[in-house]
Image (cartoon, rainbow, N blue to C red; front, top):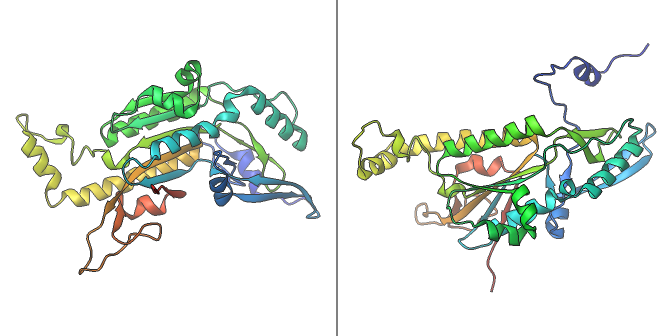
Length: 316
């Protein structure tokens, strides 16, 4: 008697409109920075029924559907690094030769039938520029794209508030659902089965520290029609503003993680290192990646929900 497995039951009975995702192995995408890729990577071994190794993958790079925080002091190269890593991550999916070769390898390894799925919508890098200082020609130079590739694969959206960010994320997700289909990833899971997911897309938030929160900072949150700049400032600095800000940032980070995982969006959230006031005259540090007297905005949730926190230091 063959006993059914719950894994197979979930796949056979899932709702088509709202499928229940089943997590096996998580692909990682190389960024082109060797020490980073292998520092965050791992080896994944596929074995047969007798636990004899069949394949071993160097599963290196940034994890699929993750939120990664880049921190440094001003002019530390955060945006340039995020752009360079994003271009390397989507490279396989904008070069048809590389994509078809990896898909054919997976097809042969698993005995999949049928043609290799074509890429419908093209992967892209979306930059949400809160500082409104990023020119597209600089993005082209960092990504090393031609004009045609830059126009097709890099989008820069100036934003101001958290609502602008969520609107941009909603458009990002809607494009993937409507115009991109799930394709085989360039590796098998640990059971030797293909991993089917959306191609990776990149969302760069530049930067979170400059993002205004509508409930605390935006003029539209002031109910009085004749509100002045001083009214807006007092609203943003009143006693309850700190609690409201913390609540909004917590919800924002949670949503970013949820959507990143579900739709394979790799998010690079850029933040700045600030000074932390000493407690009782003794310098403290927020977490082990920071030195004493340093802090980053966003609270604890911005730290422990991040898959990676990459720190850049300027060294003479």
